Length: 384
Ligand SMILES: Cc1ncc(COP(=O)(O)O)c(C=O)c1O
Image 1 (tube, rainbow, N blue to C red):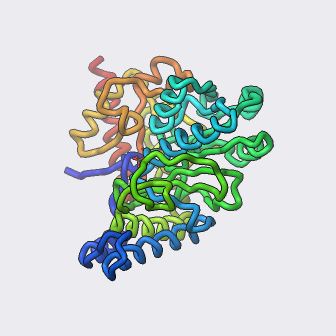
Image 2: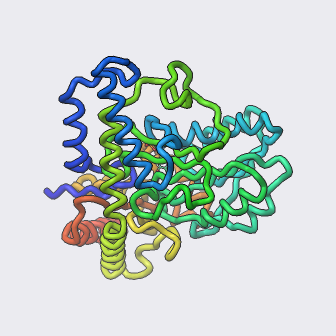
Image 3: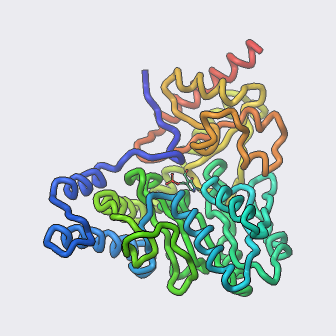
């Protein structure tokens, strides 16, 4: 049986060159990067090299990067750290969206329970936020705006530059969760009107458990982790030297290959959707998300009459890995908060499946998966 991995938005395979980079670090005796002896300095050098490499590829200063344990920690630090810092300036209103990843949603809910005033913007049926609604929700005391670059469930992108322009006018902090955008959308931190940006290594063929938060110089953010003075006192804890070195390599590979990857992913997705529509007919499959404002590697499809979990289980039996939404939501029968916020009809909500493409996927695999999906959907519909 073939094994086809179509869940790259949840996690991606490690790139062989990333693995080599990490193995090299693991094989050496890396001391604690904070130690002053030779082994410690070796660890520090590894961190500095990775930081310089990432900064060069992302268009920021090395000192503007804080290494974290992944996208979740970066988002938590951005939301809680900036909200608390802005409260000192009397700004306690936060604007975010109803379609953020839980790593933003849950900190925003926590801040709301602490007394912050939180506005949740709802998207249109394609997952796009309205700039007019954003503008009209601004208050005197708006201190933080957090909007994701590309949605992890449907792939829809947001007008980050426009939102950043609005945020600059009111002197608020702008955070962007760019976890699904890195390696596909152009990211040059210094040229974007963004103050905080979250990244995760394992979405770009790097290791799990490593990420970064870009903090533009001068942005007020309080530290969440207290202890040693690592990361310029912004994030205490001994750094994951091998993971960070792997992240550095992964960023270099992802950014250099960005345009080629975009084209390849676009080709795979269009072929996939086209073939399924050909086999099931146009009414047999519906695309959830935006046609134009989107990343190319994620597609969310509804198969009316075919329950999400039934489809996922049948796909798994055929060796095809897909998901019902974000990795945390899948595995439970919870409906996706993103699709609900998009106000999709019930039938589309209960039959939605996310497919996401990446390194190693081929047109042959896509063709095979599309045929299996059509066969499963037809069988379930006929037995219903
Ligand atoms: C948009 C987005 N933000 C944040 C995260 C969390 O990242 P991590 O898995 O590195 O904690 C994810 C992971 O799925 C994501 O897709």
